[in-house]
Length: 55
Image (tube, rainbow, N blue to C red; front, top):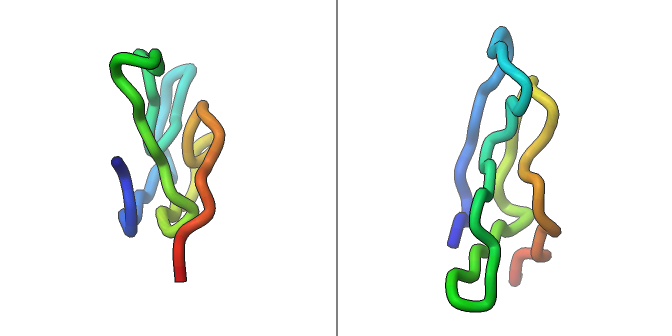
């Protein structure tokens, strides 16, 4: 679970450039990335669906 993290990828290189790059997203290994995470630069926050953060 990723919640409330800040990433700065400005100037990063390479093909992925995501704050959270999920490589195993199966039913036995669930990964949750919440919308409270932020990223500056790069290609985006993650390569999976982002879950809305609870208030």
